[in-house]
Image (cartoon, rainbow, N blue to C red; front, side):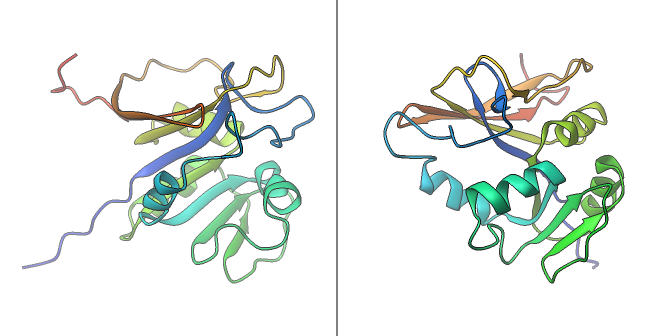
Length: 188
């Protein structure tokens, strides 16, 4: 009997301000954090990251990671990282700089066996994947801050996508909510 290949799930795991921004008006994410010193609930993150072997991000998100949030080491060691960019750069062992659209890349990756795909950001990539209906799970950490301006998580109009709340928890003022797409047989 042939072994069935598990289809990778596409997971948007991202932080936003209470008013829906993923970066402030200067493009910074240095406001990420809870009411105290916590940035995220480490238990939730480490449970999540065990299910991931691939990350996807845009060039601006890549720049935020290497310049702001993790300048001393690559934050996603041990995973294959794809950075979507119009400006070619040399690949490393773990980071592939590619010039394609997000939907095409995800469609190619989802067919392969393995762990799930984490869509790290940014908003343009998220927007494209939502329009193509390629995100299976939405894990949104809402930070206790109102920015008033910046880069919105959901950039443009899209078709309605019914979701089902799977779980929600709070930690240090951060509300993390996990949604999955509703199937036709889900009760409303």
